[in-house]
Amino acid sequence: MADNYSFDITSKVAWQEVKNAVDQTTKEIRQRFDLKDTKSQIELNEEKGVIIKADDDYKLKAVIDIFQSKLVKRGVSLKALVYEKLEKALGDTVRQEITVLQGIASEKAKEITKVIRDGKFKVQTQIQGDQVRVLGKEKDQLQDVIQFIKSKDFGIDLQFSNYR
Image (tube, rainbow, N blue to C red):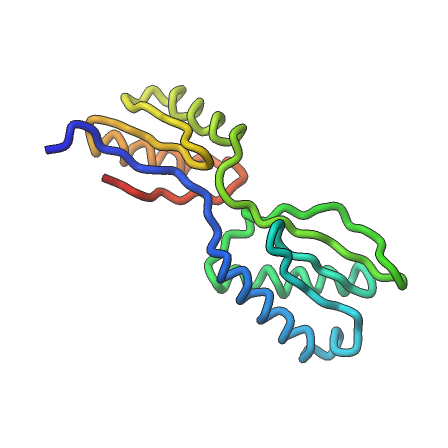
């Protein structure tokens, strides 16, 4: 029997699902009456996330709404999206970059470990790159930690994996 049990707290987004949502959004932009003959477009930026361009704020908001609905249908949390500042582009158009977060930032990881420590659980936490590992002697303690973390809002989508 194992001495310690553990699980990882991660924040990952299925990149293929984001790509599929972008493709579906592009398809819908071409078909929708209010967006058909406009300069509205959405494109994937491999390093950051997504860039949306449109004629005006109204059309940009419509494209963002379409994109968000496609992401939700594909099981991607909207908490993984960070909206950059709206920019004016060439030809009286507007553009907005949306960053798709992957992994847990070090500040968030420290915040998660502090919340677990303050919860007075008999577990140990380790920050390992972009994830947090929780170790404990009892499975029940780990399940209590998972429920406790789920009840808190850290502003990012969290998954629990490698439960052993």
